[in-house]
Image (cartoon, rainbow, N blue to C red; front, side, top):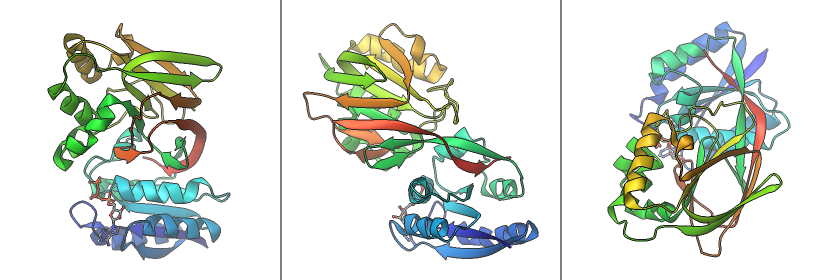
Length: 293
Ligand SMILES: Nc1ncnc2c1ncn2[C@@H]1O[C@H](COP(=O)(O)OP(=O)(O)OP(=O)(O)O)[C@@H](O)[C@H]1O
């Protein structure tokens, strides 16, 4: 018999995860799975449960929670040799990864997706010694992290830092940045650098429209040191989906990046504070197999 583990965060979103467990058990039993339910109590539980599921060679792991629970689940499986199929029931507020995979954001409908026999292999990004699924941001504005309220963060994701930064903008905003990618180098003053794995980041589905979840690439945008007026145009181009065509934006794709600066710049990784520079980023192509509609 196949084995499935449900990783359930009872505190996620509207605290409704537990309500879906019975229905999921019914669906998975019907597909021939024996189901183990593991409820998280604190940080890193989801990661540990998922590591155990990999070591015990479970066939399927389902994450019931927000992006935090999902990130922990993914971090728990990325380095393992046996990686179970992943099911996602998004219960958080942004749910970027689910959006990028077109998994319904309404939990009841997402539960129904678990009936599907289709799956999609997706890329995972490595950022120093941790993993990410959506986006890395580097630059002056990543420092605005502490000024952004949880509500803004939830609503606008990484863009909330841009907006916070715009409020305080005066004069030069660029920071020296050196980006080594494959056998090339970009070096100059940058206002913000973004490396996106998917098209849906911070709930903005047009930020990087050409990014596919399994193209094996980081879609990179260097927003150069620009004045306030140009910056406003650039922000609106993010909403319109043509950021890469702006004259003050350098766009390229890469599998590997080394980013350094002479200044102490902080980073933002999937909406959370990341290591400060220098950082190494690379893509693990088609690394995780996710159930999709
Ligand atoms: N039983 C629990 N009670 C309280 N907190 C928990 C429990 N289990 C896990 N956690 C914490 O909840 C964090 C993740 O929450 P998650 O992101 O899934 O939900 P959310 O914050 O509601 O979603 P979102 O961030 O999308 O709004 C975990 O990283 C962990 O630290």
